[in-house]
Image 1 (cartoon, rainbow, N blue to C red):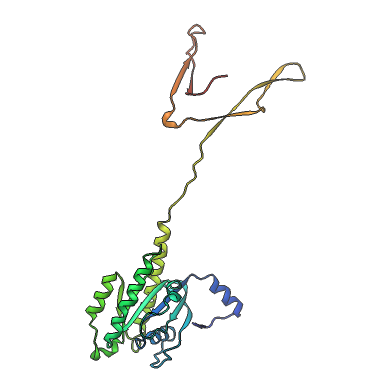
Image 2: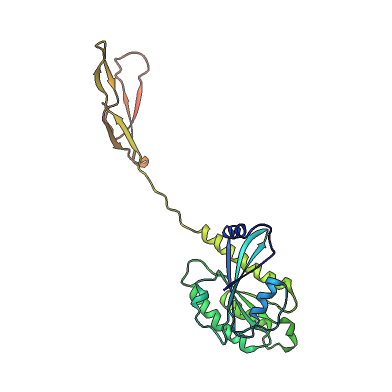
Length: 272
């Protein structure tokens, strides 16, 4: 099931659907064990509200029209319902444009499970052409006094895989939560642009041909022969420029005292 968030727009539902169809899309999957705060982050981002209790068995995809850096995007967020680690990963590995792996800073076990998620994503992205941005999130920053996972440990784990790292609080700060989601969209855009920039170009080369019309005599109405160039055309391939040899043909010295004309040809052609 999919739910729609965002500000209501003027106009009918058909116009809204047409607008969504023309927006660039970004799919983000939130991963982590039960109690890490995935649903709280999702709802905070979409509604600016904090709700402390959720059904841990409910998995859903939410859709919101966002403006990131003055550019609209249709953002889809999958709030997964894994309980104790990765299960049936194909459902989001082949769907998501970016991944957010979430743990709670006051739960060491949730952090340990993140290792498994990051390893699975790392193995998956090795076999695809376009990279998928991954963000490691330490949630529940408001529970600092109960912290079991240091910021240094979280940063070290993210650096190990070359991923981005954040610490946020779904309870307190909406701006930080929004920045994380918008940064994910920015990274997806960068990867898409980078993939387009390195796409190979294929150029079809065509060899040039020279048309040599054969002049044939055709009698006119007045009995004076004329020449027609509309007969069958003979094609000869022009030698490559690097192999072309210039030949100069001069007229006889006995023709006149005028400067002898010269004719420049390419080697391999005959004068008819």
